[in-house]
Length: 371
Image 1 (tube, rainbow, N blue to C red):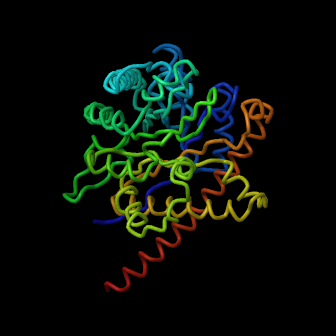
Image 2: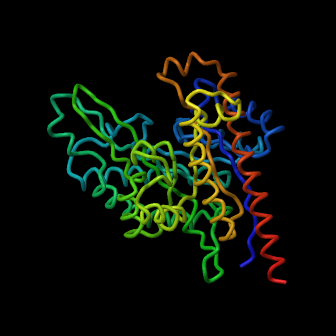
């Protein structure tokens, strides 16, 4: 198989722009792309695209006419809020059923957007906020590995059919299989769970971050091999307890590369890690450097894997974070947030360029040895 070097496609999330409108954000991204050519598109939720089909199509057209691709982010409860309030209480089966219904309804909305869509990320929240009076009953009604398995077994066939009917979604991320084919139905939709911990009314609720939990995700991948992942290493650190690749268990460390990396189609990273690196700030430098190295190590593993499978593009998003509260986020000017985004993109580009040089050098050496 002839290996090609995939293009790095970076998507900027509209939610990182705060109260900025989509047209204003698109205009600023066009200016940014004049210097940072890796900016390929914008990540937008269905809700931010518009309230109805007409508004969503108009937003998609604006993105396309501006020369950008669209990455659609979907929170399966449909309201973008942390938690699963819209899913409601009930048995594990009823929770899964409602989530599947939400998944299917969003596919219908996305189908109407046209060929501007490059990739779809379905994000599931790990816990449901509960009041003290409901705590005893509702703490058992959270997203857990049983609900996750039931949900994924139901939605993956829907994903496969949807991708076959819309082959432009994920087509630049399609992998060449061992038979030399490039199936349309395997890539284009990836899954993500958030990972956070909170204490509400003195009731502890620890999110096990299903798709960032090494034990659970390995079991799910073994049970459902077609599952594709969105990987946010910040969530991995929260759930796992230590950075990617720092396990003392040799078998587990190897499993990360062998069992998980091949399923990663979208990488999510954060400005709090990258902008400090680019501007050479020294706040918590030892810890930040360690985390940055683990992030970059995983990125390079994914890029190398994608190269060997003939992928044309590799996808990343840059989330603006590091704020202690919503108020602090809003207090930071829009200009300041765009500067953080720019610095983060430059840091990613440096890492990609470094990987590319090393990859091309290794490929050249291998070629000479074969002569």
